Amino acid sequence: MQTPKTRRVRLATSAMLALTLATTAAACGGGDDEGTTADGKIKLTVATFNEFGYEELIEEYNAMQDDVVVEQKKAGTANEHQDNLYTKLAAGSGLSDIEAIEVDWWSALMEQSDAFVDLSDPEVEGRWLDWKTEAATTPDGALIGYGTDIGPEGICYRADLFEKAGLPTDREEVAELFGDWDSYFEAGREFVEKVPGTAWYDSSGGTAQAMINQVEYSFEDEDNTVIAADNPEVKEVFETITANAADGLSTGLTQWSEDWTASFQDDGFATMACPGWMLGVIEGNAAGVEGWDIANVFPGGGGNWGGSYLTVPAQGDHTEEAKELAKWLTAPEQQIKAFEAKGTFPSQVEALDDPALTGSTNAFFNDAPTGEILADRAEAVPFIAHKGPKFADINTAFQQAIQRVDEGQESADEAWDSFLADIERLG
Image (cartoon, rainbow, N blue to C red; front, side):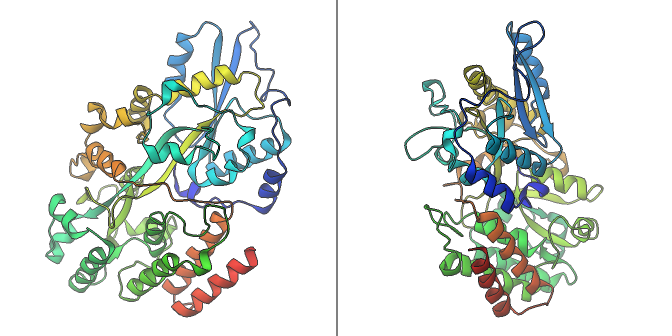
């Protein structure tokens, strides 16, 4: 589940130190309580953050059970959930029977895979898109996470502003403009020339993040060795973004800042990278603004931004019952219900073909067939980009370097050198 605050989560040094000290805790006892109710039923807790769409599902599951009662523990932010997760994982006790894990934390937690139950089961084989399952599978073949939502990306755009620039407004014609990043930026240069005062995209940082998500190994390699300084793909993203910002394509704003939020209301920009969960953000920030649409395309192919998994910590007292609950919550039919409740976009193959998904439209986005579009975008994703233990810190340094160029604090060359120095300090 990806949100503004989720993306800003950084793996604090103390939390990471606690994580590296964590050991397999199967013998360390149960969750936050004794794991049973007063009348002797098994009590299972599910720890989530933000919105997973589980409220009604848990009520449904409880109604089906004679011997199990499920309680959801929902943190207000991903930060709170992550801090609790790392602290109790290190302590060897206190975790919920099921813990939700955001995709950006995944590689760090895979180093402690023994602390989680192997969820492999013939009943779930083929349930998810291949890249969703592969990211949750250890080198020795253990599946330690059941996929929940994903963040397939399209391009959201202001059709009214496109019309002002003389660009196509029909979403199929717009898709033809954005076959790769070069054509996307070229259209942007044409746009800012014809519509002075309006940027092409919402922020350099957000666009850079979308591009980095298309690099399988950006800042760290598969062994989690830091490669950011010498990776030509990282340098290319940096140079491309800073050059286009110099051409006036970017607002110069930081995503999630107050000024960025305000820019939705004053024709601040015309396009933005748009994972499924971003639709609600746009609709909220752009309330009353007409002209938004979404194209079934993403420059350079598929891209995924966000998503989560359900895990079963080995320290729990009722791991088999927790596994059954996690299996049920992530079944295609349940994920469709979660999508209908909160818009969480499913990662299950069968769910992507469900008429409830493919037939869904969004009135705010010119009645776009958003379910069908995002299902197509999900099918186009080749992998989840590797994000190792240092990804969050390096990505923060990368974003800050780009922002310094945007704000005129440093030249592109100076900012790149500063980024290299940050990498060296991170070790």
